[in-house]
Each structure stands twice: as structure tokens, then as C-alpha cells.
Length: 328
Ligand code: 13P
Ligand code: SF4
Image 1 (tube, rainbow, N blue to C red):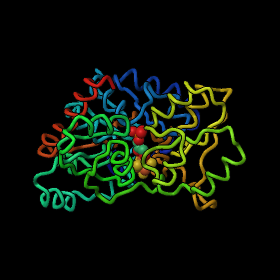
Image 2 (cartoon, protein in one colour):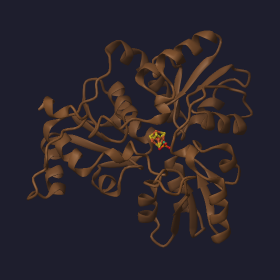
Image 3 (spheres, rainbow, N blue to C red):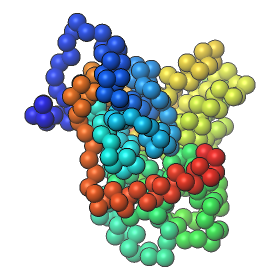
């Protein structure tokens, strides 16, 4: 079957006469597999998953699951993180082409050279990085715990923060730090148009603008709430407001709408109105058909070099321990 993997996913047509949802349910039971999905996956994948969460919750779930197989419906670094945490489990992603432009903006060799130039700095890396970048990192963070983990270091600590310059700038602004930032970014979150968001706000004056910290500073500055996908979702559930302009990947709206059916969620528009640039093209590569084939053939599988795994687990473990201590 590996020859059918040349496309990065199992390229075999799914029989038309099967009920794909019941087949996925049968396979996951039979194989003791757990399906974890990120909030940016399409609604059908979120609905069939055993668990849907943000990057931190996916890593925490991987750390505690007793399943033999983890199928990660998300992007490559999420599967890789699960594999680093669980080197003895089989970790699958439905489509290996599901990369991340932010992780790609931080090549490991260049980042390592940058780290070597600043030997007196603590290295804090966002989870959206390759295993090789994590291997030269002191502590990994996600958007849920970045502020608290940065705060856990002495005020005068010298810190390198990579790879997201927008998240780094935001954390600098709310912690009063001056961390040295890697110049990376996510192609989805960089695309949102301030002008169009402000025009939407005029149209819906009661709406709150809620924003992921990977967005650029001018958008963060006009936002009513800034947080990780999980924090944004929680905010929409807890808030008295009835309308929200959502400045992050639009997949999160599926869960927001399900959790608060009476509220209105308006996706923030990208600069280019001819594209669906507020959708992560990588996340959207995963489909129900690819998930079915992935469970059936147990491919494609994520592998991490053993030496890299042994280094990369340290900053991830540190993040998981600190998050547990912080009650996150
Ligand atoms: P969260 O950890 O907030 O879900 O973010 C992941 C991500 O890739 C954002 O683009
Ligand atoms: Fe990466 Fe951006 Fe997609 Fe998140 S939305 S997975 S940061 S490319």
C-alpha cells in the first residue's frame, strides 16, 4: 500500500456503497485508535473526532491517551508533537502535505545558527515548529500558555522567541518584555484586512472583534478579545454579546456556532476578497475520505528521528509540566 502513498496520502477511492461514518467508527474501535482534531478542521472531521481542541489540548490529550493509534486531524507539526510525546505509538495524519507556513518560516539550520549567536538567551518556541527546531528549544509554548510561561521567567531574562513575530510582539506588549523575535508569520493570519474588519464593525456596531494573536498588531489593537482558538471559543460562550467578528481561521466558527446557536459569527475578511484566504489550505487538505483510508491502511505515519525526539521531548515536557502547574 505504500506505493499508493506517493501523493502524501492514501490515494485509493473510497467505495461508494459504504457508510463512511460507521466505517470510521468500526475501524477506530477495532484498532483502538483515537481521532484528535484541531478547531480548523472541517465540521465533519470535528464532529467525528473523539476530541477537538487547540494545539495545547491536542498535546495534552496525546500525553494521556491509552489508544494504540493516534490519528491527528490537523497539520504536520501537531502530528509530530504527538509522536514526540508518544514515540511508541503509531501516529497518523490523513494527509502528510498538511504543513504550516509558520513552521516553514523557521528552517531548523537557520534557527539553530540564530540560537548559537545568542548563547546567553533562553529559547522559547511556539509549538508551530518542526521537531528539529524544538530540539534546540528550552521550552515550547502555545497561544494558550505563552504569556504565563514567559511570565514564569525572571523579568530580566534574555529570551529568544520564535517563530511568530506577531505572537512575539503581542506577548512582548502584554508582559513588558523585549524578547528577541524570529521573523516568521502565518500566511492565513497575516491576510486579514484591518479596513474590512473596521467596515464590518460599522455594519455590526454591537459585534465584538475577537482575534488570534498570530494576527498583525493593528488588528490586535482594535480587538475586544485576543486569545488562542480555545480561548476565543470559550469567550464566545461566556460573553453576553450576540455577534462576533472572528479574526482567525474560519473553521473555528463550526464549534462556536454549535456551542452558541443563537449567536452570530462573522468571519473576518482577508485583504484579497477573491480568495478564501481565511481558510488554512493545509488544514483543509484532510477530508473524511482520507481519514477513512488512513485508519484502514494505518498510513501515512509520522516518524521522528530518534536523536531529535530525545531532545525535542524536553521542551515539550517542560511546557506540559508548567501548564499543569499553571492549571492550563
Ligand atoms: P491554537 O493553538 O490557538 O489552536 O493555534 C494553532 C494554530 O495553528 C493557529 O494558527
Ligand atoms: Fe499554520 Fe497558519 Fe495553518 Fe495555523 S493557520 S496551521 S499557523 S498555516
